[in-house]
Length: 157
Image (tube, rainbow, N blue to C red; front, side, top):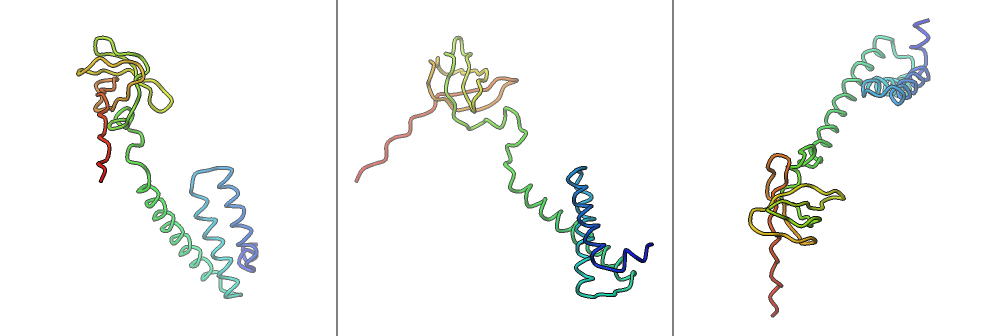
């Protein structure tokens, strides 16, 4: 029975397809490497028909290692593309512009940022609704904001 698996490239390609389907059904990014390894052994048998089972198993081990290494390199590349503000909570808003959604009374109010409102404090000025502000820090669960400075118009020649 075991010799049947090593007899044709089709068995390896079918095993690869089943492993890749199982990866979709039971996600865990483990079966994908086995599936890719089995697919590469199927391609190896297309190039070298009648290869001994030992060579096929060696090709399977090598192709799984190559697939894992390529996957890790790809994952590392994806992680470098992720924004560094991901999962920072309120600290991710520092430096961002917002609008006052509820006027500040005694230094406290609310600002509108990314389709939500957040409690905020401002020590320098009383802010009325609709004014642009910049988040400068986070204090506890409150955003610390300052009025946004108007940029001067560009000089004309």
